[in-house]
Amino acid sequence: MGNEIHIRSNTTGRYLDPNGRWTALRDNACHFPTAADARKCCVQKRLANVEIVVVRDALICMRVPVSEGV
Image (cartoon, rainbow, N blue to C red; front, side, top):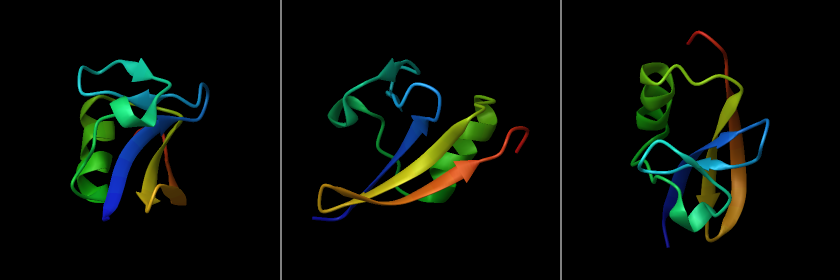
C-alpha cells in the first residue's frame, strides 16, 4: 500500500473532497499524487488554516502546515 496525500482543515478536521467541499471521511477526500500537487491546490484555491496530510498504510505519518498566502 502506498502513500495517500490529502488536504485537511485545521479548524474542522475535515478533508477537501474532489468537488472542493469538506468531508469528515478521509476515504471521500481528494487524493493527490504528491505533496507538491496538494500545496499547489492550496495556493490555487487560496486555502488558509489547512495542512497536507500524508497517510501510509492507513496511519497518518506526517502533517505539513500550509501558511496563509503561500
